[in-house]
Length: 422
Image 1 (cartoon, rainbow, N blue to C red):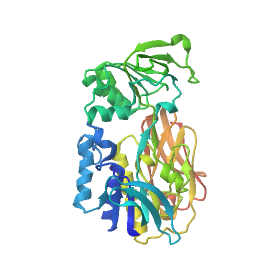
Image 2 (image 1 turned 30 degrees about the vertical axis):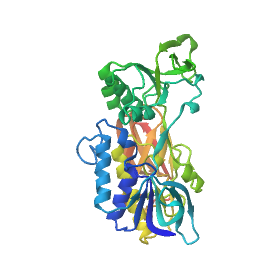
Image 3 (image 1 turned 45 degrees about the vertical axis):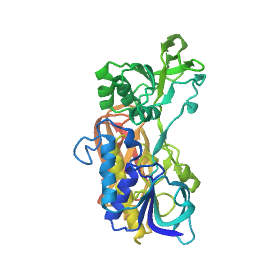
Image 4 (image 1 turned 180 degrees about the vertical axis):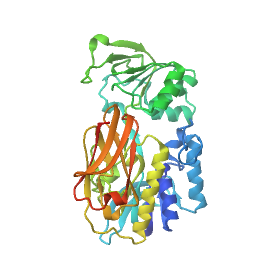
């Protein structure tokens, strides 16, 4: 059995950032395991700009951003193994973790690591999870699949397009399909607000005159062998379609951009506690899961809106994994759960141990609706730790709060994060 200090599962932006940070923190025996043929993950098919403004101070395309980190991995002599699938992660009696892998070079074998970083990313919600009536004709794609076909394989997938869901990939593909010569008839969104970033609504829809139909959804798919059209209807406040508003949109292509799901099959199989609000692992302030020495970061932990935030979070996970692998132990001190209140849907982390906290502790969360002129409040009992005013908060944008370590000292009750009117 080959032994490592740290095994990082996933060679996308999260895995590479974690590896670079772990190496800088002193860990030497590191390996990245990636199931694809190249490093970079989903960024390799994201040929549009908008990446790297926070991390590198300049605007890059997805492949350029990925290549920056891949170059760092190679320059720091961090080993990585491609076309390598991880089958299982399990704690061992000696405190290490057994990682079962399969690859063309190794066959099926078991590796051992002092620490493991989970950085598997996320996948798209498929049509089968949406319950749309109709047959399964040619011409229905998830937005990410369409992006890969168009950008990496040069496939022309359609001329008359409807997009269901206003996630960022769907918005970006509305622009991409237009630039490819297709006509995008509409983007339908079930919720009364978009699930994509405001800049993408402006740059990808408004600039090209593509209508965004809020509180609308696809209720039927027409065509048996080949897509002929979709029926779109408005929904009421309970998200129930209003049949009288149904309208047929003739089209040969339907793109589905209806949410992302963290790739946590390995996480669940390992017995790690999952937060059902995010479908990601429950982690503490060090991004450590319920299994000691196993850390989680990036989109497998919770879906991010910017890759720059993925890299920052993953760097912290890599640094903490290195500290653990090099023998630094967490103090045995009291831990406090983070509870959510009015408007706050979830938080990462879900618990904080003040004695183990860094000088600055991140609490990241999303709201469940659109809120204007509110204050984000973080309290422990009657002690107010943070209060931050916001003009507007929307579900599509992740909020990042920083709490100084001295603020956490002396708390004796669980922490609550909630919104109140400013």
